[in-house]
Length: 169
Image 1 (cartoon, rainbow, N blue to C red):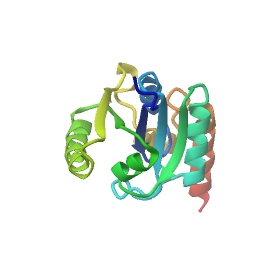
Image 2: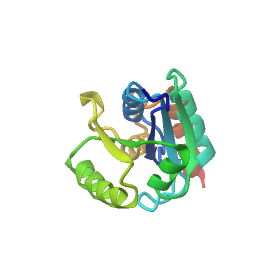
Image 3: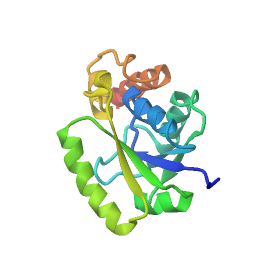
Image 4: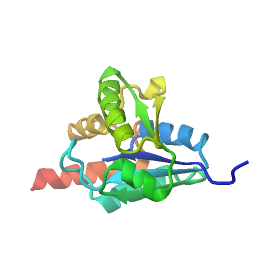
C-alpha cells in the first residue's frame, strides 16, 4: 500500500473566491490528502482581475481556513506543469452548466496530451451554487446588490470597498 499523499490541484483565477468554489474545494478535500488551490496570476481567458494576486490568495486562505489539507498557491505556467511540479495526480474543477462542460472538455483534451498521467476530475456544482460565478458576484456588487450569501464576509466587504474606489477614479 502506497503512503504517497494523494494531491489535487483546483486551478482558477478566483477573482474573487465564491461559496461555489469553496463547495468544490471542500468536496475535493474529502477525496484527497492535500488540495492546492492554484491561483493563476494572469489569466488569458479572463483578462485583468479586480483583485491583486496576494489578496486573492488571502481570500482563499480565509474562506478555506476550516479545511484541513487545503492551501493556496499562485502559478503562471500550464496547469499540468504546475500539477507535476507539486506532485499532484489530479486537476479538479467544478462544473455548473453545459457551457462549463464544453470549455472544460476542450481543456481536458489539451491537458491529457501534455501530461497523460494527470487525471482531470469534475465535481458537479451543488444546486444552490449552480448559477454562481465570480463575474456574476462582481456585477451584482457593482450595482449595489447584496453578495453576502455568495462570498465570505471579508470578500463581500472588500468588493464594496474596491468598487467604491474604482467609481471615484
